[in-house]
Length: 406
Image (tube, rainbow, N blue to C red; front, side, top):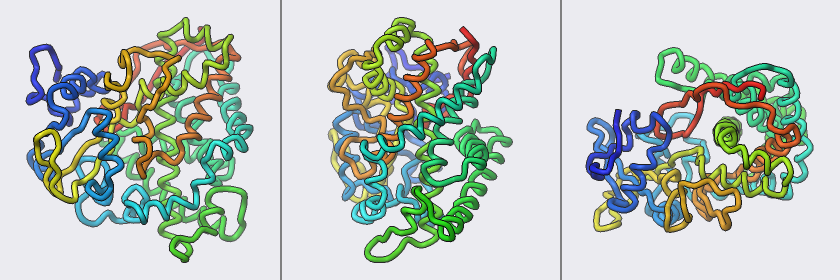
């Protein structure tokens, strides 16, 4: 198991060593790199370019995220990169830079504003209440499967236009896509779930073309980019993208939120009597947890940074998990402070960057409503065993979290 101790140096840190993430994001390693090697090379022989760069300071993550001219998303955002043909994902907005990214995102911008969220709050609350109420009286259950997976999958299904009776399928597919643990069985479930989601996207496009409704898919069917309607391939990939993006960040925040709140009885008590503090708690949960550890970009030209050269074609990891604990921006960064203000965290990506999460306000709405409903019930469940993590650098996710009635 890899550890970072007082005698470690930045040259010994490999940010793709899965053991480094066994207990969550390696914040001791991030602390060391921010102070001694803010631009850090991890050698990975056999992978493209035999490794990748990492930036861990808040300001650098912010600057590189906004610099789409020199750091592109078109070669993918995860490591190892998918070099060459991206297959059906070539139509994924995540693989586009401005101006194409901006043009494809524009039709949905108004659907995810704070005003738009206020219009669907009752719908989201109904989902949250239904999920919680059906667990009433249960002595014990898995919080991740029964709550963290159910709420975001059902909310995003409703928003996109999936009929209520088919929400359970989407919950299962999303859970299998983001629950990979390296085993052959999980990989098989992942591959099948990806095929199922893509196939369902095709079905939904056809259904909404035949019978329009008040949902995102119907809106996309009437959208145009550069004067032309969206192709079926783009529409189907929008379904895949919204399903994944609308699920995993909120899924991880809900899972870790339960784990954190279980350790903070004073905060639980405060939330039951002071609902005005819930909004600040949501923002601090997002900063402290940082569901997506990083996103990546590929350099389009040689770039000098911190006395080193990022070569054209090299991959750069933008570590949001490290940026959100940067002491230059956040006082006592490893301390949870529900009253932290301002709180300019990068849990949804860098502020002002083209790829800042489209559904950020929806995720906030789901988390706020969940805390309100849990507070109204005086947080009836407590953690009842060790959390089981998804081991990997990309997501700070939990696979299982046993809870029981308090």
